[in-house]
Length: 162
Length: 137
Image (tube, rainbow over all chains, first blue to last red; front, side):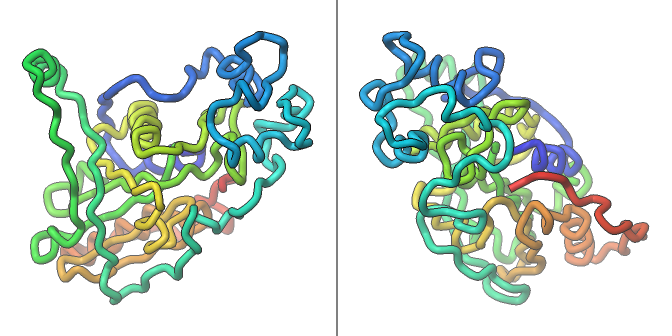
């Protein structure tokens, strides 16, 4: 969540840390800007720019990054990165919400849209290590919203890291 | 809030599409903001969520991962962030505004207290702009 949301969530809840697994995010102490991040991650030949060939995350994401569409990412394309107002890519604005068209929010009194979503696993270090040693895969856990009906209210907090 | 009401209310974080992935539609990153590429797979989204949980000390909360078609986020119009409460009857008891401006934890708490038949909390009326956060999504 960006610095806005984290502050909100931290105000809401008691804390407890469980670091589950190595994140697919470069450690922040290795990159301080978007350009540094891209260079470290993709500039395989260390020529100070990132070619489309070096970039591995697909054409859609490439097009958002290659602002001048010259087939290379260079530092001057990211001079304003880190501040609000970078060039907007195609598709989604602030209300976009992803690949699906934004729907109207369900109103008070309406039936809550049901879902059945994967639970982010928490690491039980000793058990996990033992199970891994025994060759047991952790069974994914899912939560279905409607399973709480008749039992307890549910507070839903929607958000992301950025 | 979870420490106070967690025995009677289920708190679920629903982890959705990144609001400001560095290669997203509204990029942000660096200068103190997390540098995150927009996850392409559920595994990637889970990985970023894991980092988020660790960095923000959310380990006491159960975190759910929205599918990559963002279907749950869409059905709740929740992007970039939003609060809801669903009553025991399965109906929406509280629907917060869209974040960041509409993200009001006090309102969620008030709704919880109504659901639990607890007396309301006396709150000082916020001055204009107080509690609203700068920047955001």
